[in-house]
Amino acid sequence: MAMVALRKPGAIRAFVIHSFKCECSRGAYNKRDSTTVPFIMDTDAALSLLKESAFVLAVFGVLLVYAFARGRQAITNLILGLYLALLITLKFPYFDVILSNVADAHSQSMVMIAIFLIFATLATILFSRLLPREYDEGTFEAAGKKFVFALAATILVMAYSYHALPVTEFVDPGSPIQSIFAPEQGFFLWLLVPLVLLFIL
Image (cartoon, rainbow, N blue to C red):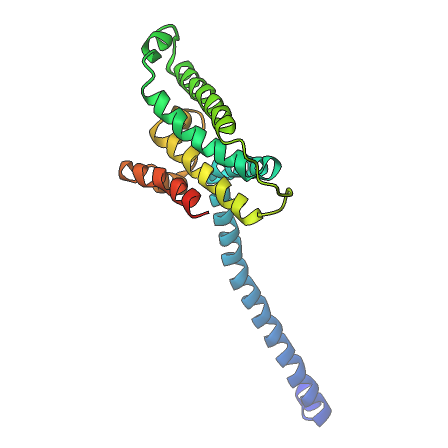
């Protein structure tokens, strides 16, 4: 009976249209399914990279806010203060005496970072007095230069974290950041990058 019904022109046309719609729907489902899996994988990879880069993003965010809030001169003083603080910290002769009174390695790392932060703060204040001229600019004026200065300061902090200070005892910056800043031969180059940026800008 069904075969007889299909012999009618209207029935044949309806059957063909129905079959075509089914095939199209099946193809669209398969296409959507094939594109969903790579999208999920890409999202997971992006979230993993973001998690591993959280430390450097946090440092850059803080320095960027500082640059916009205080101005280019303030972030420049901070960068110069970080250089001077590194020099003083590396040659500080009383580390052994101070650290001998600290029990565990975790606490010793905290003391070393605290001493560096004291030197960095004092050095930044020193440069703010030696270089008192402030840029006459608004908060968002010269935003590009403030962005670059904040990036330069972030580079110094990350380079110090791997080669001068035991920051990685407390925070794991992640494998992508480690591959960039951890190699010993790159430390000198990373020290030069902020100076070059300051010279250009």
